[in-house]
Image (tube, rainbow, N blue to C red):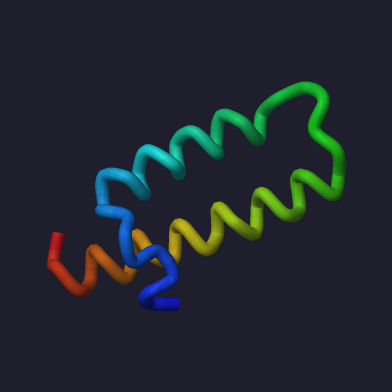
Length: 57
């Protein structure tokens, strides 16, 4: 997974994560949208975890 978000900082990824979590709670979400957005959220979480391990924070 490393390198998937090469131009995004840790802070950028956290902001995107929180925005996507809120967006996923919308009333008119379709099942397909929810699946793809959950997959994206999972990738973002993986990248955040890699950054935490790599930079030890």
